[in-house]
Length: 224
Image (cartoon, rainbow, N blue to C red; front, side, top):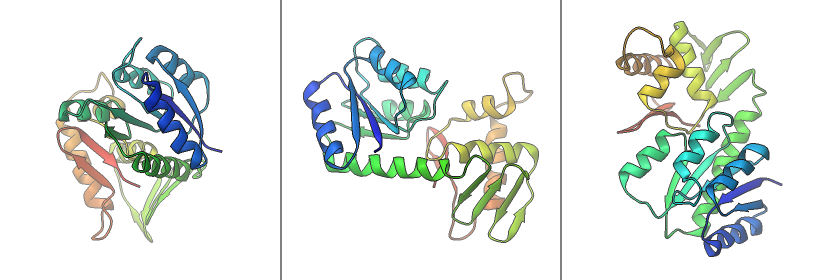
C-alpha cells in the first residue's frame, strides 16, 4: 500500500484529502503544522507528500527547501495561494505539481496516482539503467541511446541529462542546474545551461518525442 503524507493545518481539508485517498487504496498520515510535517517527511518513508503553503511553524516553501536536501519524494503543493509567482517559486524549489484551492478531490487523487506511478517507474530502473520511451541511459556504461542509435554527448551534456532524468517531472531553474552540474566555483554563468540544454535536445529529441520541456519563467524539466 502506497503511503501519502498530508501536511495541512485545516483539519476539514486534511480529512477530505485523506478520505478520498484511502478510498483509492492509499495509506495516509497527517501533520497539522510545518515543523511536525517536515520531521515526519524526513524520518518516515512516504511515496508522496501533499503540502499546504501557509502553515504554522514553517511554511510549505521552507519545508520543501529542507526536504530536497535529503529526499526526492514527489511533492504536490495544494494551496489557496494562486498567483503565478507562488507557483513558479514552488516548482522552482522542487515541487512536482501545484494545485490551488478550492480543488477537485478526484483530480487530486488522479494526480497523486500519476506522480507515484512515474516515481515507481524511475525507481524500477534499479539505479543503473533509466529507460523512458525510446531513450535509454546506461549509467554503468556511461552510454545514451535513442532507439537503436547511440548518442554522443560531452561530459557536461551527459551529466545534465542524467540529473534531469533522475529527477523527472521536476522543474529546475538555470541557477540550480548550473550549481548542480558545474559547481559553485565554476567559471562562466548560467547562460551556459541554456546552450547545453539546446545541444542535448538536438541530440535526443525526435519528431515524436520531446524529453526536456521549458517551463517559461521557471526553468527546465524532464518529462516521463
